[in-house]
Image: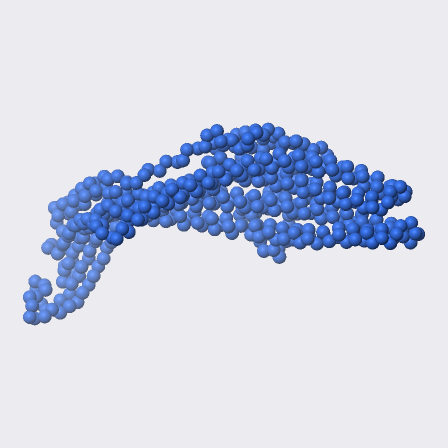
Length: 494
C-alpha cells in the first residue's frame, strides 16, 4: 500500500468514526427516585424507653436522631466473644465469598461490554498451494499453473454507536454491577445480624436451661420433703403424686431446651464457616452482654441510601430503564464500518514489495423491516419491566420503613415487658418463699405451695425471654437501619 493510499485509508476511517458516533442514546435517561419526605417511622415519636433496676439488660435506651451508625455496631454490646465470632464469620463465611465473586463477575461483564466502544482489529496470514486448469486463464501473472499464494492481512471492523445501543447496554451492566455491590453489603449485614441474633438466642437458652435446672432441683427437694411427711402421715399419697407429676412436667421442658441449644451452636458454626463437629470456642451468657444505651435513628430521608436492599431495587430500576433504550435502538438502523489492508504474493520473499499491497474500505447499513413484531413486543416488554421494577422499588422502600417502625415499637414494648416480668418475678419469689415456710409450718396446704412454684417457674422464664428480646431487637434495629456498611473498609462503595 502506498503512503498516499494509507493516508486516504486512515482519513476515511477517522471521518466515518467522527460522523457516525455523534448520535445520541435513545430511551429515557435514568433519574434516581425522589427520597420520601416527611415519612417518619412511628405515629408517636419515641425518645427514651423505660428502665428496670437490678436486672441485666434493664437499662433505659435513648433514641438519638441522625446518629451515625458504626460499621461494627455489634461492638456496642461489649462482648469480646461476639466480636471474635462475627469478625471470623465475615472472613470465612462462604456466602460472603460468593457475593464477592458475584461482584467480580458483574464488573468483568461490564468491562467486557465496554470493548464494543473501540474498533476490532484482527491480523491473519494464509498460505495456499494450488494448481489451476490449463483451459482457463492463469491465476497469476507468471502464467504458471502451479503456484503458491501468501497473504498477510489486517482487518478492522467498527460498529458506530449511533443510537446508543452500546451505551445503554453498558449502562444496564453498570447498574447490574451496582446491584452485586449492594448484594455484598446486604450479605454482610445479614450475616453479622444472624450471628448476633444466634449468640443472643444461645445466651437466652443457657439462661432458660439454668432456670429450668434450678426449678428441677427445687421440685426434687420438695418431693423429698413430701415423701418424708407422707411416711410420718402428715400428707396424703395424693400430695406426693401431685409433686411427682410437677417434677416430671418441669423435667420434660429441659430436653427441648438442650436440643435448641445444640442446634443453635450448629447454626453459629455454619455461619462462621465451620463444620458442626468443630465446637466453637465462644460461649454466650446474657450476663456477658451489655445493652447499648444510645441507639441511632437515621433520618427517614437517609434510610433509602443506607438500606442495601433499597439500593439494589434502585439499581434494578436503573437497569430496566437502560433496557428500554436497548430495545429502542434495536429497532433503528445499524451501521458498520470495515477495512482490510494487506499484501499478496506468490513468492514469500516478495511480500510487501511494490505492487503487492491491497486495501478496501466498506460501510454498511441494516434496518429491520419485518420481523413479525418481535422487536416491537420486546420494546413493550422492556417498558412493562420498568413499571414492574418501579413498583418493586416502592414496595422495598415501604418494607424498609416498616422494619424500622416495627423494631422501634418492639424496643419500647420490650422495655415495658421486662419491667413487668421483673416485677412479676420479684412477687413470685416472695410468694414462693412465704408459701414454702408456711407449708413447712403447716399453715398452708400443698396446693398453695404448688401454685406458688408454678408461678415462680413461669416468672423466671419470662424474665429471661424479656431480657433476650431487648438484646435481639436492639441488634435488629441496627440491621433495619442498614448496618453501617458504608463505614466498612471491606465493602467497596463504588
